[in-house]
Image (cartoon, rainbow, N blue to C red; front, side):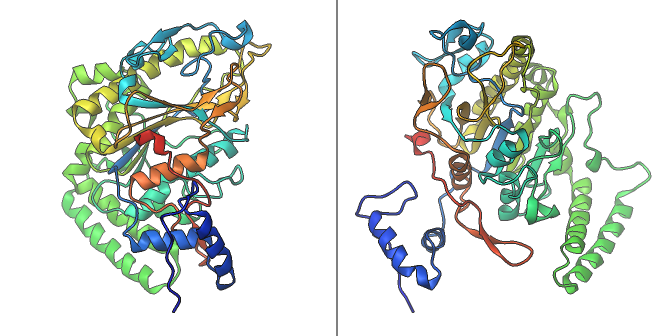
Length: 441
């Protein structure tokens, strides 16, 4: 037997390993021991990362919000870079954000702004799958999204799904943020648009002709399918079908599941405070879902791909975001939900510094802004910076793997843990990355 230990007294690198550890790991390479495996073994022996959060609520700004015109204004730049918006003071001394975000300005002391998000891809699908999973792959999504991994690791422990997308997953040419090789059991549950009149989640709506007794008989029948799937070794489709059927029946019969999605339980005043828009009501439903035990919620708010007439677009989009997001933070804080919920706001990239000939900004992965809040994140913080034109990160770059690593560790999931593909091949959840520790300083 080989006994291994890592020194904690020498200089440590961003991965948590010391330089001496790297020499030891190199010597152990012939035995098939890689750095991720060794660190994973150490974490497993120590019980894994201590969770800060019970749930994650991701507000995904698909298309790529312009950081120049929202959270990283450049008032001293030339006109074609600085744009038309002025900055306004916030609840944090010295911090200014876009004038179209007055409500968000008042809650900036409850969130931490990251101005140094960065990567090297300007393609919607590829960049989206990268930031949603923490791993670079093809445009078709080679790696499971964070929500899918959380669903895999936490399981369907109650009567609410572990991973819900409101109103649906992000999409451009095709759907993004999927489970990849983790399979159908880890896909998101699509809630639909909670701003629709008479909103009901289709998969939770019980037909008047189907009584609880009939549903119970069907669930018993599906139990037989589960047993059959267990005897057909390796048939993931059968197993998934049985599990989905059982959970669907439980959700339809469960008052808790019905209640979690029931927007009518909210007062008119609360619903109005979020804004009577798809985004505002999606934020409110997201709050209800984490309140009822959903582990990962994606609130998908697309439409930020402003290649032309960007200021006309932002004149509409930013006020809607401002009302919904600020209400979410304020409401969760007042209810004590921020204590154990990690809230994250991001898109797949920022926008080009220079306004183009069509009065728009194009894709720009080199720089972008994000927001973190809750689960111990320090309010009023600003991490990282960009140059005078907002083109390149000049301090504390935060890459997609770092964001995902931070999310997983917040939930107590080991980012270096190896999962098995359907072919039995071990793949670590993340291949690189480290926690953004400045969030908690």
